[in-house]
Image (cartoon, rainbow, N blue to C red; front, side, top):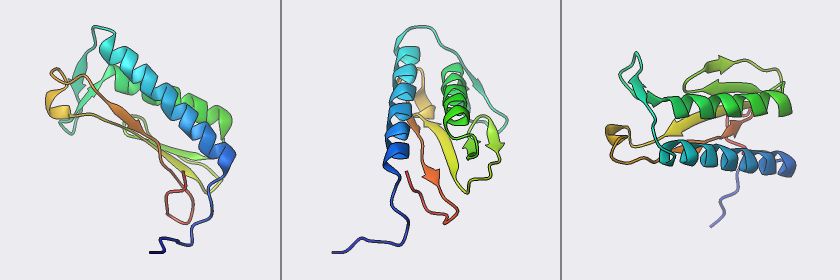
Length: 121
């Protein structure tokens, strides 16, 4: 079965950067959740967010702004930052929000879309 589609190939250097960045975000989340005391609050939409979620997103934003300053960024906590490169990174921390206190686990997803509208990294 051929699963090819017409999206451009991923830039290997950018892909490696994204993998390293996601790894650092995962370590930061793990250290925060398993390291002891952490707090959450309800957002306006009723969903729950922890200070760890916010810190991880801020860290990712800082890295992206430094490495790819012309790229747009959309974060679940920090909203949108426009860019001019035609690429946009989406930062989303996901966790079983129904039971954060029972299951101290989280993951950060970091897709990057190009102006083709398709995920590229």
